[in-house]
Amino acid sequence: MGFIPIEKLLNGVENKYMAVLVAAKESRRLNDLRRAGKIEITVKPITLSLERMSDGAVVFKHEQQPK
Image (tube, rainbow, N blue to C red; front, side, top):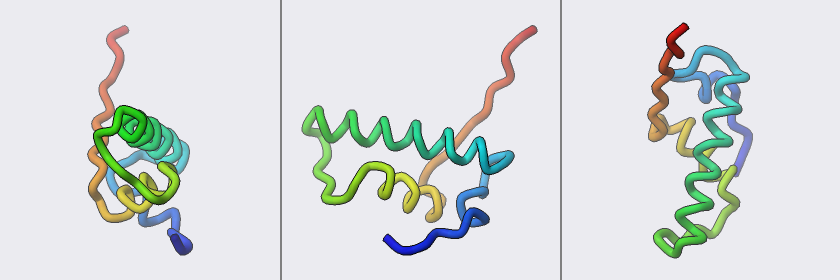
């Protein structure tokens, strides 16, 4: 994995802090799938999640909490 500019990760998210949260959740999801034997990955889950985010393959929907 090379350098991924933060601007590429901001597609579909509000700010860079939200991008970090989305990447972490995607990494956990990928790691859970790997542990269950459903996918085989050769790179670290965080690397794959950042690559998927920069490609636009990760869809994030922010839901407002009712007050």
